[in-house]
Amino acid sequence: MAVIQAAKEKDMAAAKLIIDRVLPKRLCRPLDGLVLPPIKSVADACQAMQAITNAVLAGVLSAEEGASLSAVIETYRRTIEAAEIVARVERLERYASAK
View 1: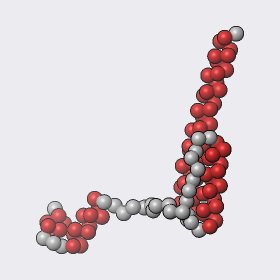
View 2 (view 1 turned 90 degrees about the vertical axis):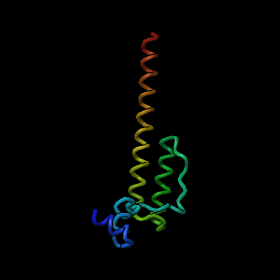
View 3 (view 1 turned 180 degrees about the vertical axis):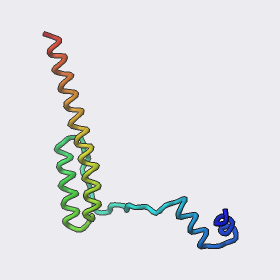
View 4 (view 1 turned 30 degrees about the vertical axis):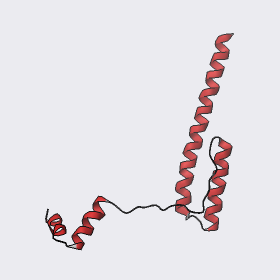
């Protein structure tokens, strides 16, 4: 309560402390210069990973940013593969029950 009162009394340090707690600093940045292809298949995910790797090597992304983006792409790739496996199993089950 003392910090809030100090901020109300125009104490800029107290105001900054409150703002930093309420609106924490962003830990990421816009990724200007990086264009990833739309990802609809495993092959598209491979192209996205290639773009991320090239961006890290060119210094457009840091290694940490590249690793974070790669994790997102990898998770999405596994999701695509799981959906494809489910579809295949369903087709096989329909085929087997039709016999």
